[in-house]
Image: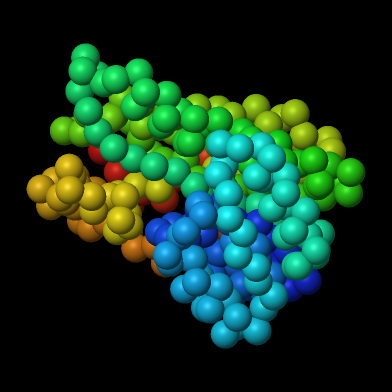
Length: 254
């Protein structure tokens, strides 16, 4: 259906070097968009993202920087627009995860999580909106987590949960601030997903429990995040803003 197509549009994707961000970047290209891929300097896997997009015949550029640095984002968006055109889509997927008991968590660990997962999303949205607002057009999609709405059993990650809850409300707040200026802002909250983040050492023993506690009986694949992202980026969701779209296999129903 044409309303899901992204032909002629240019997208900026943070965290495009791995996991959900990487798969969505490629998925946007599959739907017709040209894509600027942003990740940390030295990302070893961003070449895979770029190569996959090039094979689809779309324009693509790899850009290096940190979402915690406003100057990196502003510079990269300037370079992105020179390479792929005026941005009308942004996917903010950069993020980290780790775990520690709340009573023992160093302030530095708490602060780094919020700096990347929450402030990084804000700075990304701000930089993206600065080029979208004058044109009166844009769709921004932030990757949150079901952990922004629930507390995961057996995982001591108060800083992660807090950061993702912040992303959900940040998304709703920005959506309302820009609702009459042509920019839609939505979030996707994945459930347990087979990415390096959810297969890290501290949760390896809990994967079977994750699957058992998910009504669909399994974790999501990164492929299953593409459809929701394309929907929220496309004309198919033209009357959708401020939404936190759960993609969790029914987890929150239980």
